[in-house]
Length: 404
Image (cartoon, rainbow, N blue to C red; front, side, top):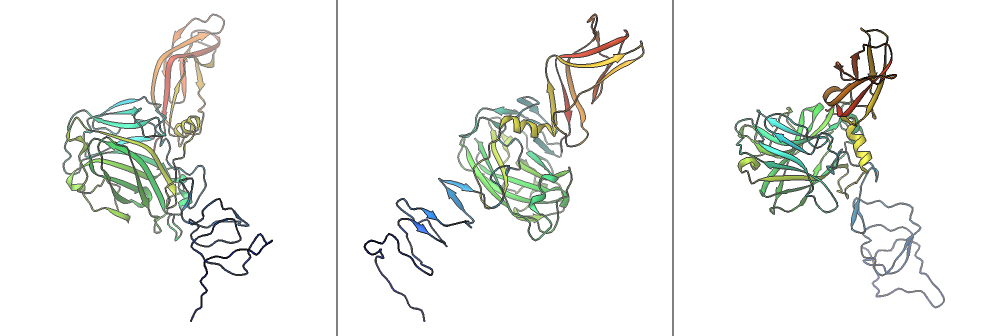
């Protein structure tokens, strides 16, 4: 049998400023300063209380001034998505998409199952939720209906060695939380698929757009995979897929646990077809993936920081008057110049594109000649003059690709 004493008020005697208890005290509300250990729910504190003598707080949900704090992991560098604010667009700001996978805003790419025709223009849009300046917009330009194994989606790939702290393949595999903002005139059920590349397994979650032309934030919990590790390399770790249309052969049940043995595109039978009307549009913004079960405020990074992260996968050198030097000693000699990348790219890149005016000059006379060769790593030309020479790229760019 337990005993209890119920009182309405405990207060210090005259001339005494505090009341001290030698053991635990349980109450539904404390008013005023509390010194010592506090266990349980402290939401009942009122007035202007202070908590002192406390060296640590252990909680699964800590909210300060209305903002949730991470349940695990750091306060900074917690967002595993690169360019989640859609600020960086090295390739341009508008892309006509049909049946081929197309990189659009940096780190975001279209996905096509069965050569499905997305028939859309994807742009970096200034329509964005509060606190953001940009979004990715899919604007349908011609109708399409997916059949059999046809799929249309937007995807983001995360490098495997950036996911090692998730401890996949162990009993300590971490839960992650994915948050993002979406908007569309077409309401209904959409699907979010996340693929673990090394396991060829996926989770499939549904989310709903409830109100037309209204920004809505979605939160999805991704439990850790205790069975299969993510390789510690520069390959693909996660492939996060926002489905916009899916053929009936690829309809499967939603799953909040890791399932399957395929890298294919899958959605539920509830998935809407965004491409059934040229009036349809879909926006994505504020994408964040973080360790823990608590969705915290979006981690805004500087533009320079985000650009450098993007350049690991795609590098667009766009600078009028870019100059390199070489030396030609005879008519058959060639002058070679190496362009140094501002960041280490994920792997040896492929040369993607080039444009502009290439000229060759002799230092003493600055008489121009056309360049005769361009590779992924240097510009080369055949000189007709002996002595020192240099080349110049005017009003153009070089592009290098090391995407996942």
